[in-house]
Length: 175
Image 1 (cartoon, rainbow, N blue to C red):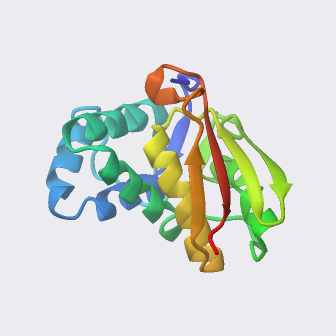
Image 2 (image 1 turned 90 degrees about the horizontal axis):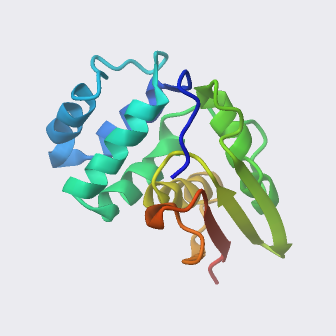
């Protein structure tokens, strides 16, 4: 899995979305973060990115990938987003800029995209975040911003969960 620069940080809104999505497991999430030095989170605060990513990996280990997916889907409800995200192509291209707006010291997170057809795209993520989290973020953006459900495919040949540096997400509007 990609390792961020040691000084990279994540904005508190990302972390608060994690806690909000955990529901009955919120206390477990708070404990996992506290074990990594993240406590008393505020939306505008800045926290170590690697500690947060490690916390998400621990959540996957303890609770499962579906929780990571739910956490990812919450992200667009708690973070700053680029303006003007009103079309499929704009949302598909927004993940790198949104990452940059809510992280510092990490660039665009190694996120790229390619429009592959009408309302179809491939998004590549080399962030330190687990792939099920990324899947939730992608689907959450489209659901929140365009009220759109996606047909989603994860390329198993390139996967952070299997030790790869990136995950490849193929998406298209569900009909």
